[in-house]
Image (cartoon, rainbow, N blue to C red; front, top):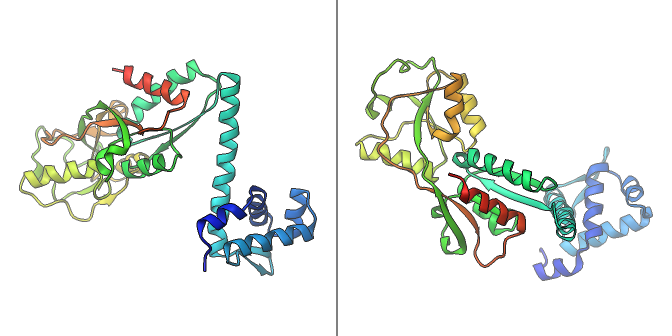
Length: 307
């Protein structure tokens, strides 16, 4: 039986977590002890203490040495996260003490990537010593990372959350959505298109219940049409663009800001479909009641000032 969280928190030590990482990387008590400058008996004792604290065996002895089992891989993964967070903590503290630099973690949905890129370019001119982590994902995942404290600010839509009041939200931008395809698509020469002409084609769409997906579903529903069958679902901009370039018969609705350069270069084309549904504006979001870091405040200022 797993111990309660309070017991784990009071008994686990950072040095023990570092030992787990070394054991996973080196596969040997002897090598892990050397790497940590402790004795082999000391490393063995520490591993036994960790497994006792967690109430589970984490490593199995094999012909190749020590190998983490399923529980061990789970614990090691979180040990790495904690170790990385500690390094980020030190980096941010150094930035505060020195009056510059520090660390910023920002998340964004696909449609806001161009705006964020411009904002970060300006921010890095102001703060060249700043370390920045950027994550592109869906709104619900970004909000989850924000809740966990892994993101300082995210650009997404809070409507996907059950607790939208938990966030400080600044409405920023109404996306212009366009229908795009490969230049070799059979509809490439069309002068005008109706939605009913597109039902039989294969589509790349956002995952279920995401705002972009809901917008597209509403477009078909209000047109009295069933949603296209057998779509490819992804929230990845890179995957969507790569598949459109590879398959001449795929269709996708994407934000204009994201595909504008692709269309100008001729790698994709905009098809002449007038979309009636409008997507929700995306927002610049932080946690309510939590004071943002100086880099986060600076980024928000820049993004809100952009046209």
